[in-house]
Image 1: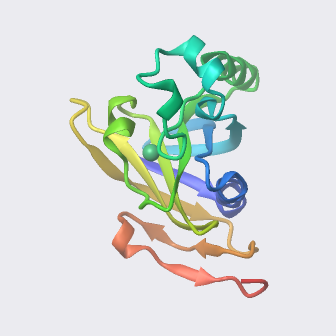
Image 2 (image 1 turned 45 degrees about the horizontal axis):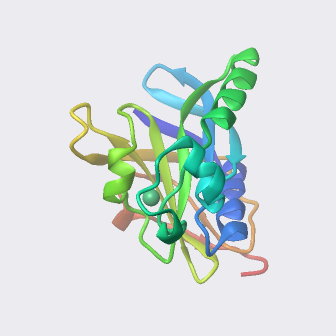
Length: 186
Ligand SMILES: [Zn+2]
């Protein structure tokens, strides 16, 4: 499948990732399935529960609450997930996947990401280096849950850009990413 996103949706994700740096941000991708593609309609930022260890503890048993690194993990509050999902359903939208950031780490899924993911859904990861969004890649877990495969992220709706970089064209793997520097405040 292909995940179709607009430049403004991508920007919204980048802004969130940069705003929450050096912590890890997360959010939910809402939209519709159209044939062989997922059409992203809305980006719903949600709080990373890892940043609230006391509340996180109520949701899952943290291995070592005092030492959990919120920089390398994200956790969406199930209540928040339900709220977003219900709200989306009313508008005919479904959950297509999730996004999160990797502060000062590549936009590749960690083992933790793999263990907490489900097949079919899109997992967008944004690497943030020194506070700036860098690479963006969408991943889909294989049906046997053994590995993540890169998903084609098609970005539509040209220009107009933040102070970072805008991805253009169709991409299917990180090394092939094309970036164009913003013509404004980069
Ligand atoms: Zn991750």
